[in-house]
Amino acid sequence: MKIGFIGTGVMGHAIVGHLQKAGHELHVYNRTKAKTADLVAEGATWHDTPAQVAAASEIIFTMVGYPSDVEEVYYGPVGIFQSEISGKVLVDLTTSTPSLAEKIAKTASEKGASSLDAPVSGGDLGAKNATLTIMVGGDDATFNRVLPLFEIMGKSYALHGGPGKGQHTKMANQIMIAGTMTGMTEMLVYSRAAGLNQPKVIETLAGGSASNWSMENYGPRILKEDYSPGFFVKHFIKDLKIALDEAAKVGLDLPATTLAKDLYEKLADKGFQDDGTQALIKLWWS
Amino acid sequence: MKIGFIGTGVMGHAIVGHLQKAGHELHVYNRTKAKTADLVAEGATWHDTPAQVAAASEIIFTMVGYPSDVEEVYYGPVGIFQSEISGKVLVDLTTSTPSLAEKIAKTASEKGASSLDAPVSGGDLGAKNATLTIMVGGDDATFNRVLPLFEIMGKSYALHGGPGKGQHTKMANQIMIAGTMTGMTEMLVYSRAAGLNQPKVIETLAGGSASNWSMENYGPRILKEDYSPGFFVKHFIKDLKIALDEAAKVGLDLPATTLAKDLYEKLADKGFQDDGTQALIKLWWS
Image (cartoon, rainbow over all chains, first blue to last red; front, side):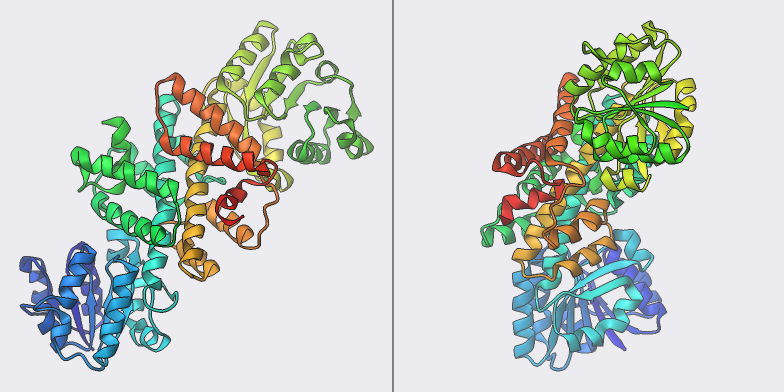
């Protein structure tokens, strides 16, 4: 199948690799062209604009940084919607706003195309190992059409409702993680101050009702002072802002999520925005 | 072995049952005598005071509510330390303060006895199914002496250091859970407001980096409006206060844990102190 892929950052790059290995014909665009060099060497076709990628492909994936980038690659002067896309499918893998996903769905529909919002979780490692969780919004027919490709890139994929519901599910995911990350961080801060053997504490807690993925995966990395990004601080702040904006729209106060956002902003202000989210502990330990 | 057990609430009662089934001779005391009736019917001996339980037993467990109750059963006018306890072992299963654990260890040592602080996690169900996690502070020899009994009541037990370190480890556990509970609660509040299929969201999140015990166990109960206590709101507040007091002693600010404590206090103020901790969502949904 002719597949377009716009945005070959760390995760996008890994996903394109999986799609190539599965025998698909790839058409790629990225803001930094150099990052597509090895994909092109493996047979992908470079295009100078998102519009050209869309023109050459049947299913077009986008995976960029911020909602403003999504807006640009879809609605910009050389964006996807500048091409004839009737009958095609647009799939945004970026974590972006539910309202933008709804807007893209409406525009796509007006142009005879269909779309899915399909943000992922699992980070770099999930992309590399094809173990991503993919949270999808859209209609059944479009979901089923893209499903064979989701199966190549992830291990869990579900349709959570109409346009925007994939993004809402991802927001729920990030709100949950805000809790595990702040809790884990304060747990480690406390347990070090109490003079405990921290690897042993993590092992004990992992066996009971405190167990969670963040602690079991990031805990040991923090104890090795490994703050390399699986998931960037700056992107987590973006996600939490979207979640809190959405909550505010319906009059919801989410104090723990707000606190997490504030703490991560404080961390970014100290210059750690390009660290992984486990770097939150630097607010205490640096 | 002659085992004393002071405090046969829901968890203590279940643990005594396991010890009886394993063939031990039980000596019991509880503030409300009626709660020991069936244990006595199964062969346990009732005593009118903690001191008498201690006199009749080789290893004495205590499992009461608050640090003030622990103080009372050890140091009160009819408390354990009123008895001759040389050569005996005192094991406090209550979640209490590290400093009280240290004080008990000192007094026990002065009287020729030894002690362990051994708070548990796993709740009512963990006690009933003998799957508790037991976090122990004390010395190796005493730990090894009590180990065969820990094996009867739990599935995970580790010595985390000297007197008080069991309590510190439990505090680390509760700080972690404060994160998973607040995160899960806000996740569910958000996902309902976003019109998502909540069981499906929980299922999806459980498969990825947001996965955690609280969500997977309490999430479905909340969706069934089951707020019955596995673990009481009032006891969680007690634990978080101890954790924050300990943190304050060493100059640590733990904002997420503080927020969790504040939210749970607000919940208790609304009259929900005897609900299970999953009732936190009532701040939004009731």
